[in-house]
Length: 177
Length: 177
Figure (tube, rainbow over the protein chains, first blue to last red):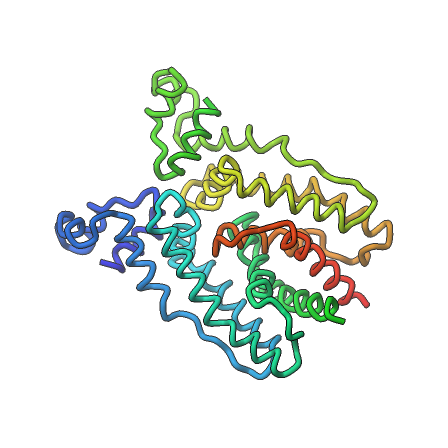
């Protein structure tokens, strides 16, 4: 059912998601879906959580630059892939659906928590100042990538990904100096 | 009709937009809407263009920091306001609707072109290196703001807006040094 839901999200977006069609793809009756999930949004939320849980690999290369580039590349690859793009669009548009908005907040809190050790290790190695704001660093690295994909729709190649990391590292160190 | 469309976008989002309801709000028959705009997406696209055209004020304070902070604050205020947030969500989710996607690309191309003189003037004053990439600077300043609103849903206060500008200015200058 989750795969059918995600396939429908990719093809039609949240606004074109029809429970009857998901039921048909999965070979069940739509009453089965409503009995188990209650609402269309709960069905989507469940698919989002199941699909997004295990995907991130947190690098530990010994270099904050390489670690952050590795994370930023994963995010770039995720948000330009049709499946994840559909999920992210659903989350970003989720303010009309409290269940999705809640899932979105938990999703990001989990991701930020998972990559925070990368910043901690960089501080331990003396690569970043001790008072650096973990969430701000991640927002500054990932924000421009996210913005280019969902805003102007520009390409995000490896050079741009690396420029995001380098600009933040130079900026954070310059501020501290 | 545009106001009725935008009001419906704010209240229901693109996925909950029902042409019949917009027609009722505007006091016309839905066939009038379909005759003039053809599709629901064309109606939304028209409202988006009409609503977003005249809003940006391009500062010219004599300081690149003050100019960029002024632009970034306008973008922050725009994307957290319900009307503009609804428009931006519709644009970001527009990949299932070529008309909206096209509007989105033109919207951002227009905004980037409008604020490019801010970077040119900074180069003329010697505040930024001559080889700076205009669009990259804007993506780096605006991206983290956009990401925090549409991704994790964090607050974006003036301190964060200023930190985006300062980090980019320090990073760009550090790179050039």
